[in-house]
Image 1 (cartoon, rainbow, N blue to C red):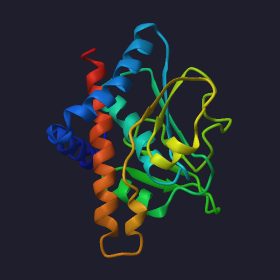
Image 2 (image 1 turned 135 degrees about the horizontal axis):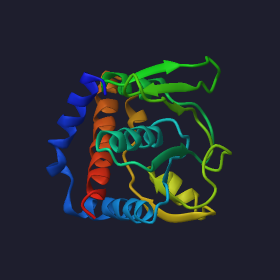
Image 3 (image 1 turned 90 degrees about the vertical axis):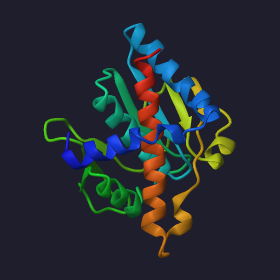
Image 4 (image 1 turned 90 degrees about the horizontal axis):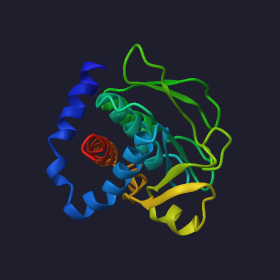
Length: 206
């Protein structure tokens, strides 16, 4: 794992006390789901859902996969999707770079594909904006993790889901184009990374 990234993750671990007891109870449902799947020899599939699949859902997908690698929890596969496809926002990619990930743009289309690396040996996490029911996402036996209230309200039913749970976050897009832009994205990136790390670490304690 890249040194800068490892240092970033250690910093997020030191912030676990910032997660409230109520929030830990919600997140613990994801930990329990993962542990149950892995305990029966299945793959734990996590799909992070947000309206446009451009910011928070990608943070969730990336940080959960990184956390599984960091804690050596095998059998976790992460995905993301939206109620509509737009594009992974450039500010999202920039925040991931600042956290220590290597982010490469594979194509320059209106909906570009990104390869996101956390070390030099492991295949990248491939990210682009898509709907939650895209062919590359699982259609059954998965947990749908709703990262924004709009997606939670507008997706009343997701077929094939084992667990549907809302872990909503404030949208960093409110700071786009302002002096607070990078700080706001870094703050949301860190919050989601912190909670994804906590979820995966708890799997080992279930």
